[in-house]
Length: 71
Image (cartoon, rainbow, N blue to C red; front, side, top):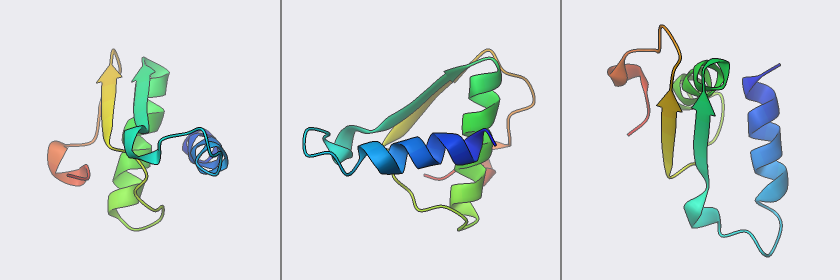
């Protein structure tokens, strides 16, 4: 649901030989930002493996605090 789906797509595309895994970023606006922020907190907690080099989140409300996000 939501973050799990984003992560599943990331894992699926990362196996393609034409994808540069050093450039996979998260981007989301509004509810997409909320999903991605939640995914980043779950990565920090160890639920998912870190696969992203950065994130751009805009327009959402109630993001997790910065100390909950991965470096």
